[in-house]
Image (cartoon, rainbow, N blue to C red; front, side):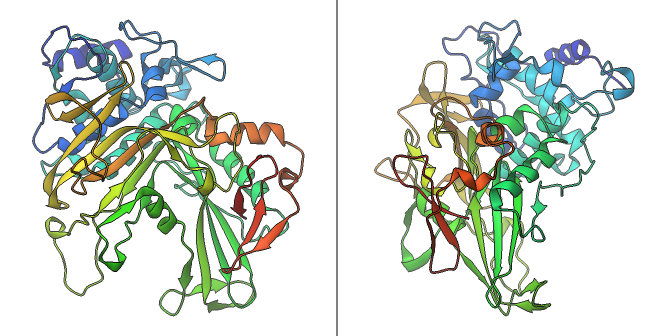
Length: 466
């Protein structure tokens, strides 16, 4: 059954049961727990304070907090981007298309940011998610990172501006994760291949999520015998970071987690790589490089891991890594970790706006809450389902009493915005030129055999692996 935007919004209003009470700060609204849905509530609370996305949905709405959301000089209205039936000139929805975006827009406009409610039920959006993803239909506890990935993918598909491409359950020439193998393009440098990969991806996927939430990773594998190298670019919406657990140290930092994520890995007897030049499975070195960072940067701290064992472990018993992870609130500098082009007017400097916390001992035994920075009043709030109250700030692994509960970290770029993580400006500025002209000729080979160059555009030298 096809449904208009107006009909769906009216249905949403009938399904909500929030208290209509004027409150001082919009955006600080409690969400009722609908049978083990704390994972859902905590994630939505954080994402609702991702300012570029919320402003996009509030543009041209009738809420008192409506902001004219602009990106690159163009005014956005999410209705224009909704994916609809292409045979009827975008006038009707295909089955399931657009419904997640419509439900989320209603939640933001009519409830979370209307200034009229203190506590509401997010049942309409939750039911929409369950219809599309039956795995969330049971009343079990689910993982916020998994839900966040599904949810953002749904939004991106619903808001895909490529009107000739119905994205849900369809594949482009690239793999579903946006990867692009450049192993056979030996004469092309990494920067050129990154542009080709990104062009191929955005030719099929073009949405506010792609613009502001997605970046590029560069996966490099090098044969230790002949130095033959495979380069693969992959689109990401969040970075899943391992937590260093060596030397019985119970405290680490987000920077140490990023270093662990990008650490060179040896592919040896247990995990050989096939070299098409040696025509054999060989020992190799693998390195992940963060090529670009988006305006909204999400970190997933891998607190729940499956240990190698012959014993089958129930998901309820997956142990939790309780190590404290220190993370900055107002000054996360990702510059040392970014290896691709950088927009110098919108550097990779970030401030925190949301934390999803897990309080408990294992993956399925615990409770999720959120701590968010409301961009309307710049105050921090603790969101525990329907209970919302002001706090000084998030506990972050120092003397604030953090017990290792931080699970998802939500950061936003501090100054200006860089569409596509800076790739758009780089592609425009260096179109038709050899991309390595952007860098100096100075090169050094490190102990792992990867090449470093120095970015001559910066006054302070920045080493980069290419």
